[in-house]
Image 1 (cartoon, rainbow, N blue to C red):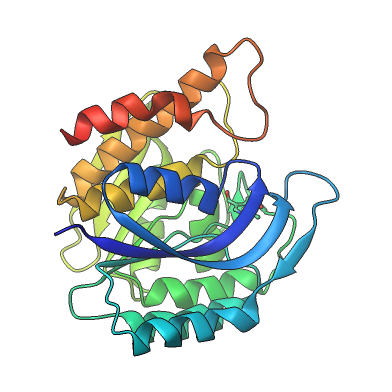
Image 2 (cartoon, helix red, strand yellow):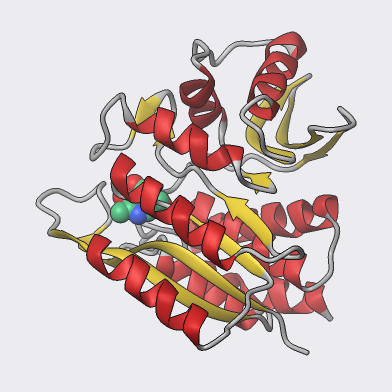
Length: 276
Ligand code: PXL
């Protein structure tokens, strides 16, 4: 039977991120994708003058309707959320919808390159850390990991710094951590950490010359889709990283590279081939 997930994040109407990335990717991977849109923005927040309307008052009614219809989910995937209060609401949704076998994946999308995204203040990471605490798998980059664990953000670090970060993330309460954008021993990639056993697996991959907005969402969506299609954590990370890298490559190959998001549409072939 086809798996069904619900993804909970904003709609940035233009910008190739959040729901406009998660819906096409996870659906293309053969997984039913229900959504709870948490806010509507004209664009993502890297544009100037974006419009914003939160949908806080819809989140619980949508959930309760599904509950009354006895709809069940194999996965719950949260991404960008608009406020600490909204995170609180979403934690309630997870409690209501979660069954014994529901995989809860939290991407604490809120920061990169040592900086919070424009719409957030310093109180936000504390709330996000709480949400991460109830997840099965969290998908932070190093900046997000630092903000949620009160760790100094560094660009020059060693293995001990990363080990410490993984342990602090585990202490939030999640079961597994996928730490993205790690540079160690001249290699660049993703670490998978099992909080119970302490086991670490790594997947190193090419680092392209430019970084783009929305790649975290491409990665998270692919990771969720692959997990639902029965791949284990490391295999899901490999596919997510390879598809993200290929999406960036396609963007750079264009005569006029898009600035606000990656051309994940042009790389769909890789995604589908790897699921065969
Ligand atoms: O890609 C993450 C994301 C999602 N949604 C909105 C954003 C961002 C990143 O800035 O602004 C509205």
